[in-house]
Length: 188
Image (cartoon, rainbow, N blue to C red; front, side):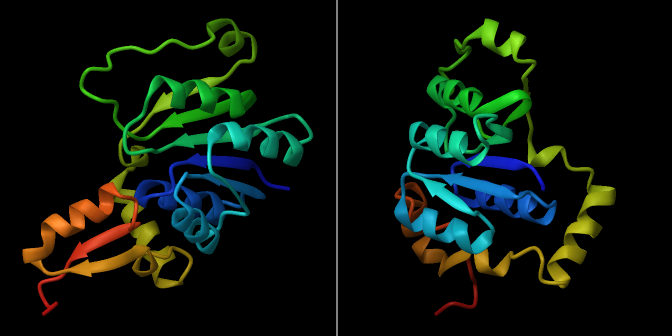
């Protein structure tokens, strides 16, 4: 079968990662998010399992993989903390890859993690912005996936807002009540 992928944070970026894993044939996709609405939403986009925390996901992934752990872990919370990276590396198998897709707070300059485990287990830690996309090649591919119904973009829009309600949109985002919100100039 395909890979086991864990996505930590099932907001807009995480939901995109879940779909990417599904489209690319992952056999098991575990979405980790403390917000129950986002866990349920993740299942609609291709997650096969959910967990509220990375700690909860460790036992689940261990069971799913017979102790091997995840081939890839995508870390996409609103802000990445040292704990997020440590937890993600625990979920990453020997020779696996952990990808950081979010930002840290402006005061976070470095993190601590188990270097010996990282080196001895031959893990890869990478950072990315926009999935390291090559727009010339990838935008056409993504448009094709959208056109054929494989990439669900419209479904990611949880709520549409009038421009005057932009502060409500931001509050909903911070409260984890939406996957993606859109300012719609046609909304009355």
